[in-house]
Length: 279
Image (cartoon, rainbow, N blue to C red; front, side, top):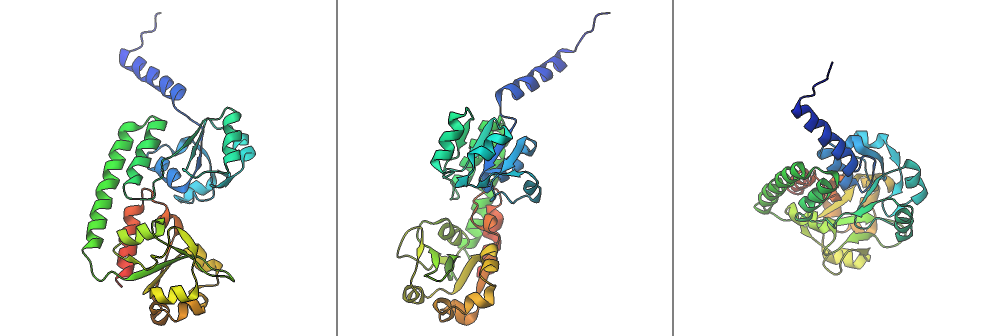
């Protein structure tokens, strides 16, 4: 008896084989934003490992970890047997990236995307690598629309408080966010004003300079607040206690990847931060 296979079924089977042969099926993601994008595209079943910044969605924590995005372990990655390492633009160290490529592993670094414009670009980048260009195009368009809506809503609100983002505290000067940093960008998108204009990026700032900046709101990541003993202890520090933020005990604490990840959840971050700044 001769078996007759419908033409439509043959096409489906051929496309499935083509997909598995052409696009990566064992992916290691080094970058929480990229991991979130893979999940948003519905391709999480292809992920076999993540870096420690990949903490959302919660199920992402169940996979193998490869270290921090800028300090990955090439040996740990190779042990997982990936056919693609999807990395943030600053994935490193460079020696580890070179080692992976020398071992024959495909490594693709995403475009820098710590801006409203950069998020859709990252989505399309990931979608192209995974063979999900149409789905990525739709997701990028939706994110772009959501970003525009939330940014416009925040821009229309008053007042626009002066915000200082503190990345790290120690025995020395606090590490804060200056011009062009990811923290400064999310503050501005949410309708605030970055109080630090003296320098670019993240740098230590003296007590005198912080007091002169007159921040009205202290912004920190949840993990940092816990690391430094809680908000009460933080606001007792002399470089913060005498600022308007310290005197009124006005602060905002948010999940770090939500706040600074510039991934699919950034419209939500803008909304939540904007609301908090006007309370």
